[in-house]
Length: 381
Image 1 (cartoon, one colour):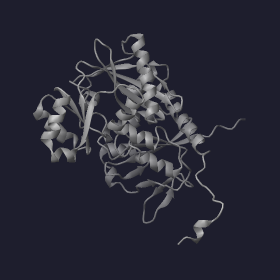
Image 2 (tube, rainbow, N blue to C red):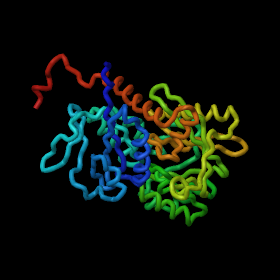
Image 3 (spheres, rainbow, N blue to C red):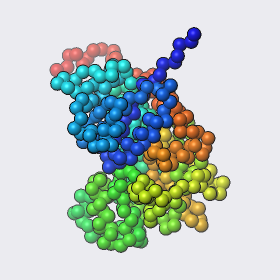
Image 4 (cartoon, rainbow, N blue to C red):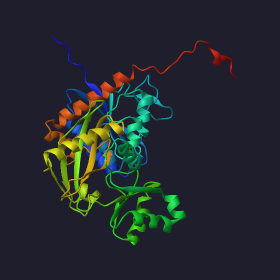
C-alpha cells in the first residue's frame, strides 16, 4: 500500500492594518473554501486592524465579528528560520502549532500586506510564500514608482504628475497652477500607496481638486494626479508565473458609478464584467504583451492583475496600475479571467502554491554567507 503524500501546511494570512481589511476577509474566505483539503492543512492566521495576530480555526469569524482585538492568545510569526512556525504570546513566548508552515498564502490587500513589509518577515522566517517578493511588492504598491518602471520598459502610461502633501501645504497655489497647466478638468487624484480605489477622487473643478488632495493625504504622503481618459474602457489582464509569466484573456469592467470606486467594486453589486472583453485581436494581443512586460518590469512573481485604460475610437492603450495581491472574492477579476482562460479556481490556487515553492527552491541555492581568507574581523574592536 502506497503512503499517502504529505499534506502541505498552508498559512493563510488575512485582515491586516489596512483600509482594505474587509476586502481581505472576503478574499480569504473564498481561498480557504476552494483549497483542496486532501492536499493541504489550512492554518488560518488573522491580523486585526490594530495589528494583533490570531491563529485559530475561527480566526476569520473573530475578525469579521470585531472580536480580534480583544481575543487572548495572540500569535506572531517567528523570524527564526529554524522554526518556521508561530509563537503564542503568553507571559513568555512559546512555540505554538510546532509543525513548520510549508507555504504562506498572504491574502492581505494594501498597506502592511501588499507593500513588501510582511514579505520581508516571510524572508526572515525562511518560509516560501505566494506572490511578489519585497521589491516587487513595494514597487507595485507605489503607483508612481510603478509608472516610472513601466515607462522605462516602453509601456505607455496614463499622463500624471506627483508631489508630497507637505509641499502642497507649503505652496498650494503653485501646485494647483502646475496641475491646471498640465490637465483639463476632470482629473483623478490618488494616494500613491492605496488599493481598492480607497482615497481616490475624480475632481471636476478647482474646489473639488483641493478637497480631493486632502482626502488622498489621509492615506499617503505622496499624491498622484492623473489625466482623465474620457470615455476610457477599463480593461484588466491577469498574469501568472515567475520568470516566464503568461497572461490571461483581457476582461472589461463596466462600472456602476462614474468611475470604478470602492462602492462600485464591492458594495452596490451593479458593476459588471465582460470576459473576454470585446476587442480587436491585435489590441487583445498587445494588452497581454504589455501585462507580461509590466509584470517583469516591476519584478513580480506568482500573480498580478494589470489594469489598463483603452481610449474609445482610437483603441490607444495606457497602463493604469498593477496589483500584486489581487482580490480573490467570488466577483474578483483575477480568478474570473483565469477561469475564462481555462484555469479553474482550485487549479489556480494549486499553481500559485507551486510557484511559491519553485521560487523558494531556486532562492535557497544562493549563498548568504562568505568566509574571508583571514579572520580579520576577530581583531576589530
